[in-house]
Image (cartoon, rainbow, N blue to C red):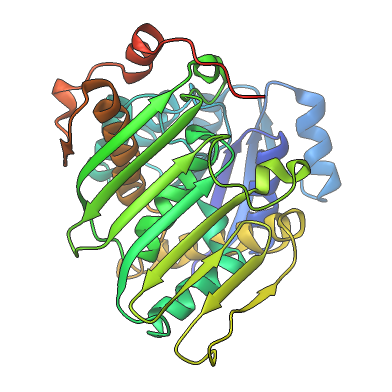
Length: 355
């Protein structure tokens, strides 16, 4: 079993989580370099973890000097493509970065194509699927406990680019990777288009997959709420409906189900919450699966860039549908797609959130 070298850009909140993921898999990874503009923050992150990697302020110099197997970066959404281009230039084997994977469909397609053409095994941080609650959803679905699946729903109080991209990915995952054939969408509100993760205030949509399963999504404050306002960022739910029951899970470790074997009762459970699982479970498992994929082509990562691109494409289609007032068939032709965020800023009327 090979030990893969890692060079990482970013030592902020998510950067530290990534770093801990590599370090909890020390038999599979060795962190050899860190890059961060805030030198104090970078040195502190290394010292707190008892490691002595090479330290850099320039990502390209780091890659040129160290030639790592894996390049990881935790940066704002606007800083993606340039770092993927560096990954291709310096022939990294593995690449790990944050969601959303890009700020436009054209950029997402280019990132995906660069990784494909350069043989880079790239993964996007849709790591919440490793939560015990969402794993329970998948376990019961795969075991046939709710019968043949016919519909999946996702509700998030957080907006499209914050959690919507996560839950679109989890719909694809729960449905075995079947691709969407068409989408119909609605969006409104443009205040959040100025956010670091730009989105309409509210997104709603429906889609059908090649296997006949349908999905309905709602992202934003008008989505169904399942928790108190103090847990806004965790107020979400993925629900899978089958011929004999249903199962749901959220990102705070809770799940519930009505199944063939539940005796007419709704069953459920509650694991450790998000704050615990993010550091102790999600990132280590995410990293371990990347090591498995690097070692074996037959074990693709569940957060691979190809499925992440399709999720991005679906969400783009929802927004296009909303603005064009028509069904959008997939796949999209990126050469015919304009900047959807510019369109929404220009075309959406003012519609402030309800108090």
